[in-house]
Length: 247
Ligand SMILES: [Zn+2]
Image (cartoon, rainbow, N blue to C red; front, side):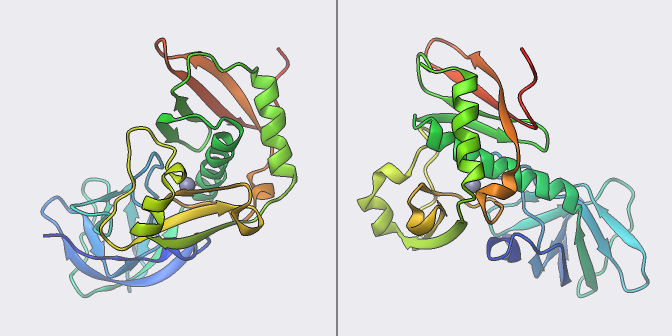
């Protein structure tokens, strides 16, 4: 069966701790809570890690967070041979915040890259030290130095990043909001979360359920590590933290 966990990270990506109650433990030891700050692997962003603290102070590690049958069905996966909590038991949640904040910075950097490179996207993956986006273009037409310079202009401008909800009808009326060639945002629930950059979304807006930093300045220094050819019609851009190393 599919559970509906209250996904606190959607309204506040900066929550590092929270209290919750165990709703179920599945047959593989996966823990389902009534509410959570743990983002579940989706949309190219890996799920969170951290701990659940029991009333006696002992900790259950969360090695991965995944979705079940729906995106609201969030499963906290402990490593093998951990203690299993009881249904109804209260737990204190704590994220591996250092890792999550790197993922938020990287994920936001990916949005900036889609602004600088406004081409159809065929794939994307975020990790804490390297991210990639595959664009459906035969030739980038610009160098990694150009792209890095334009990314850093957006970072230095410190544009606000915020989410707002739109209806299925608003999305249907603005098909240009969807940049992915293969993945369509889920419609039918009535509301779609748009992630916007800039005052009045002047820089960008696109459907996304991930976690982001609150302003582009918080992304910090990034550069394009590599542009790889992936077949005739695809170019893969890699984003890394820090200044561009000398050629
Ligand atoms: Zn996003």
